[in-house]
Image (cartoon, rainbow, N blue to C red; front, top):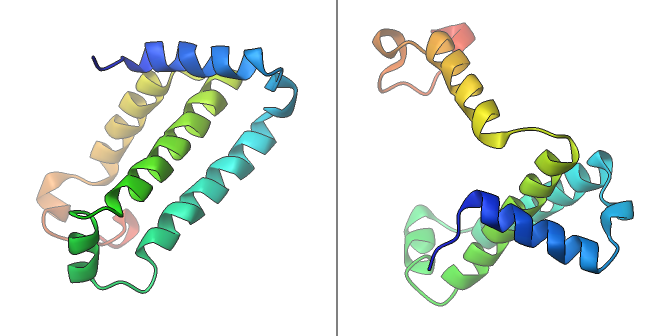
Length: 117
């Protein structure tokens, strides 16, 4: 059975609290840890062609990528919890801003930054 983000958040907080790690989970430390985990994800792709990445994601190495993604998500959720940020609300707000910065009629099929549209 899949868990909701709220259930995963509760599990993460419980895991953290059982180990008395909240003292280490300052916003700075969580942001640093999040960055490190993203770098570990990038290592999975380093020096690979798009074809090699596609093959990797169909093979056993996919598990390593999934684990790095899970680590990233865990630190992100803990950072949101520690800063009292509703991630769903923040994402919805940011999506609305991006819709304004990247109107479909100006950016469809383009990878340009909004300042260059």
